Image 1 (cartoon, helix red, strand yellow):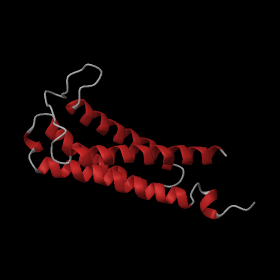
Image 2 (tube, rainbow, N blue to C red):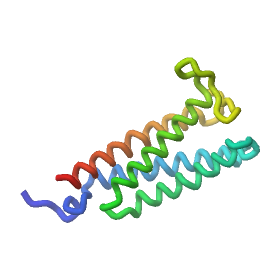
Image 3 (cartoon, rainbow, N blue to C red):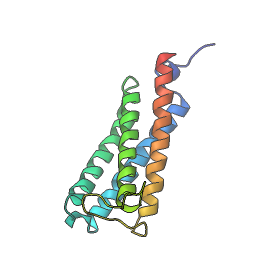
Amino acid sequence: MTETLAQKRGGGTATALLRLAGAALLAAIAGIHLYLWQDGYDSIDVIGPAFLLQAVVGFAGALLLVVAPPRILPAAAVLGALFAAGSLAAILLSSVELFGRAPGLFDFVESPAADLWGETVVVEVAALVVLTVLAVLTLSRRRA
């Protein structure tokens, strides 16, 4: 069986689609955090700067996924998945009672009824899934 050049480089259609979807989802996470930061979260101690940092890191991660050469794509995917997981953990810790722990993060309690709460959770879960699949796929191709 002959391999295409893209397959030899760890690419292929699935990898390209996952890479672009992951980048779009990280950019969406960043965009949501930037919007909320501009919409009033900037005045919240600790949370405000964290939202701005989320925006910067999210956009940087999206760019990295788009331009990463195949040899560092697995690392970029893992970092993106960890970023999405951390963001998801933060919103859940700040707004939902988990394992008997009262909601709140850095003395801030978010409400699941807050603007973009549901959309944020959906985008972060999707990013976590897509980037985990991309990481597994690219790592398995490197070992093959």
